[in-house]
Image (cartoon, rainbow, N blue to C red; front, side):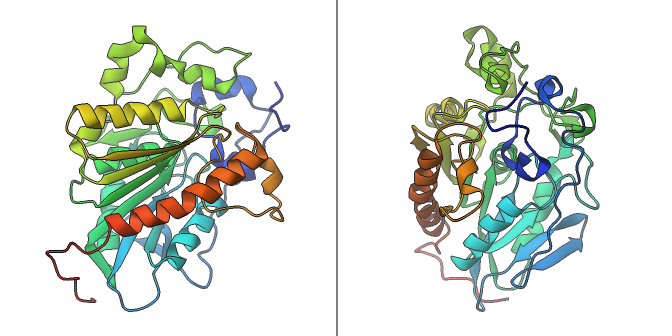
Length: 340
């Protein structure tokens, strides 16, 4: 089968996050076996290899104290350029950002399978201990499978101030193993060594494509399974913003975003804001991309139009920054923490 814009190379797999059980049917020979990116942090960042963590850290300028953000990529693995672009943009806005690799990098799993949520706990602890970072003003940001992770991690950390999830899910899904064409029989995540319950896939529909395998989450006959696999957002306390495109062709991120919002409202969870864009898809999230960027013409790769995705990013990114600033501001009844 041929994708809309031809065969997808590993360099653009950053947005290809779901449908792992079906990817073997779609993938060309050798797909997903190319070397993933593990980019150097560049002049404004430092490489982190300690405490069982591997990533790039981008401290904000000045003594601080600054809010900190744990930033997670998706099924591209490693430390890719799309998420690095986001980390640098957040750093310029005054946030200290830890881009944490959780698979496909040295000292991490080779596949997105059975990733311990405790890894992200350690990442938050490390970030909060850095000089110039206010440990009481931490946030999580992630896209797609990274969005799945940050929503789960938020349920473990009521002290977090904010969560931003792009193209999110309302349930946990199976992992991704590119060595097996994307297929995995394991959960993406574990807690205390036990696999997180996952949502079963729907039957593949060739006319609809990858998104068809995720339709199970919208099937009333699968409601019991959806409840078992649901992300318990009601356990979180962080203000939450979700960004999605209604024309998505990877998984139904907007319906799942609204499900997260409804669950939080009905079960006493945090306030959840949803930014949805009618003409955008799975590349809806992140800093704006200008027309002279070589990637600009590929913004429609996973749904929506080029112009629709570009406009969504231009509109949503300032809202994301404003949301993060407000949510991580020093509390009125607390003095700002002293620089470490």
